[in-house]
Length: 142
Image 1: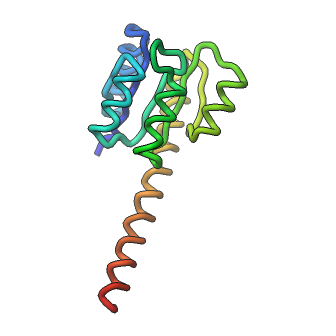
Image 2: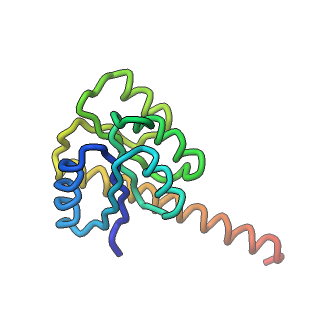
């Protein structure tokens, strides 16, 4: 099964190129071009990893991160920025970003971060499933 990625960036040429590179590495990519669209898409679909550009008009990647974390707190989000500032990196990490990479991100490094984020999500999902099983067994007296 392919890792499902949501990729949000307002730079269409950049996002199309990056999506192609990631698809060549057997990842399933959905692209959107705004923070609003990222939030809406994340509400509809359970992505394994979300990648957000920090600097998008209207709703920034940082604001989108904050909104998405309200309803998908365990979905890892990787932030990309062409204008990295220490303040943005710190704010993103405080808000729950999995990692923060400079644009243009090295594709192999990004794939490595995606793989790490996916492994973490799988671990969280497994813990939740096990807790649910344990709870069912307790309530049934087994």
